[in-house]
Amino acid sequence: MPRFPELRPRRLRLTKAIRDLVAETALTVNDLIYPVFVREGINEPEPIAAMPGQYRYPVEKVTDIVSSALELGVKAFILFGVVPDEKKDHTGSYAYDPRGPVPRAIKAIRRDFGEEPLIFTDVCICGYTSHGHCGIPVEKRGRKLIDNDSTLEVISRMAVTHAEAGADFVAPSGMMDGMVKAIREALDREGFSEVGIMSYAVKYASGFYGPFREAAGSAPRFGDRRSYQMDPRNAMEAIKESMLDVEEGADILMVKPALAYLDVIRLVKESFPHYPLAAYNVSGEYSMVKAAAEKGWVDEKLVTFEILTAIKRAGADLILTYHALDVARWLREGYNPF
Ligand code: PBG
Image 1 (cartoon, helix red, strand yellow):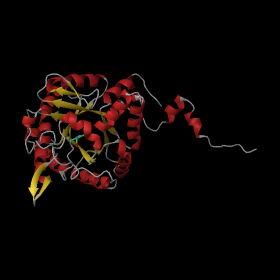
Image 2 (cartoon, rainbow, N blue to C red; image 1 turned 45 degrees about the horizontal axis):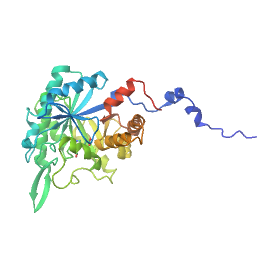
Image 3 (cartoon, rainbow, N blue to C red; image 1 turned 30 degrees about the horizontal axis):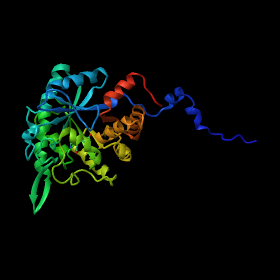
């Protein structure tokens, strides 16, 4: 009598110990970057309604959240500035003011924690412009356009301001052509050759940014971002965007959002295996999990681990995520749902 089945993959799933032993992917606290919103003009942390568990911090209190994160082993942060409407203008000039919330927060973090925290900064003007676009609008031949090249000058100055304040890496997110090269040249010219660039190389025009725009007060006041962010229908274009950013001098590439773009993460990792790849698990992805968990429809810990592990499995080396502190806590408690 033939013995059947002869091949039994289930042997490798029989106990937790063997599953852990053969697992291809592991999520660790070293993979995580925690996004932090720094708001000018408030005195207490302010909850972000659409992102339960997340806050906008006053400059003076950013060090509190950094301290809690460091205790949990989260060492990398990306800072986003939130400024009052009176500080916004057509070109986003407050973005490169050293008195702005991001440069001040960087200095406060360095003052309290020295070199240990790894500080990334988001470099984009949408939170600093009166119209909310990531570039400067101009009228040209009867049409409103987001002008690429004049925007490069503003974001280059913004990057230099962040570098001067002590940022380790700047992260341009505005999807302007040539942004990496313009920023690299400006940093080098000003003597910041050690400051790196993590480029939002592959950033889609996505509905998943909704809660972030509430958090940062950066929603466009007219039109949308489809003339600069990528079309969700395209995957191969991600190779072109990554290739250009590599040629322009990016140190780390990024795909954003993550969850609906796992194929793109895999494609970029395989096309540029010699570059670290970040994935941004964006605000809408976070809020969906939180909302469903609040209703008791999903197990928050389980789906969070499943999502973040899937992002790593797809090819991301590091993940920007609002879940970072929760995950660090759960990992510390020994949580492993697999
Ligand atoms: C700025 C920027 C955005 C996000 C990161 N940087 C918003 C946007 O492009 O509209 C989104 C992050 C998130 O949704 O968590 N350009």
